[in-house]
Amino acid sequence: METLKSISLRKSVRSYKPEQISDAVLENIINAGFKAPVASSKYDSLHITVIQNTEIIKKIVVSAADMASKTINKKIDWDFGAPTLIIVSSTPATMPGIEFANAACVLENMVLAGIDQKVDSIIWGGPTIIIKQDAELKKSLGIPDEFSPVLCASFGYAADYEEPKEHTISVNRI
Ligand SMILES: Cc1cc2nc3c(=O)[nH]c(=O)nc-3n(C[C@H](O)[C@H](O)[C@H](O)COP(=O)(O)O)c2cc1C
Figure 1: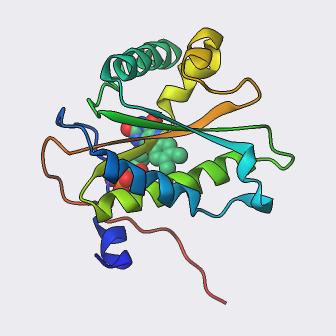
Figure 2: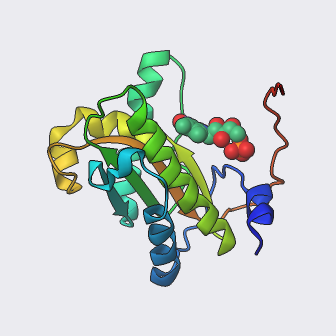
């Protein structure tokens, strides 16, 4: 599939079938993450965690949603049912925002590699809320001490088909 076609098909999916993605598909997704640009080429400032245990994913997303719901005093449902969750963690960067920029580049590459293989996804921050606050959970997920979770993406197959949304961003040209 052409890159522009993959980009045009990208959309955030919030409801998934239980069917897991294959190891070969996952490998391509992870390798696409490795191909992302990273500030100052500091690839060792990032760490990728792949979770495919759906019980663990559920525990994380439900706890994160409970915590976020309390903060904004409104019920949030983050249990999308996606069978794969990828978390990008980072060491502290010297320039503001670099951790997020790096993680977003890695995850967007992964998302596009997913679309190319007919895998749906969503980039989101929710799960990081709970992992950041729960040292034991962070340790159990094998995230090294010096790294902190920044951004995540869920992967799987959409429960229902939805058209990608049209968006625009303001542009000025000189
Ligand atoms: C950094 C980032 C964080 C996001 N966090 C959430 C989130 O916490 N929950 C959610 O449902 N969607 C989240 N999204 C998805 C956006 O809401 C989504 O990309 C946007 O509404 C545009 O829709 P589309 O991706 O379907 O085109 C996030 C996206 C990005 C890039």
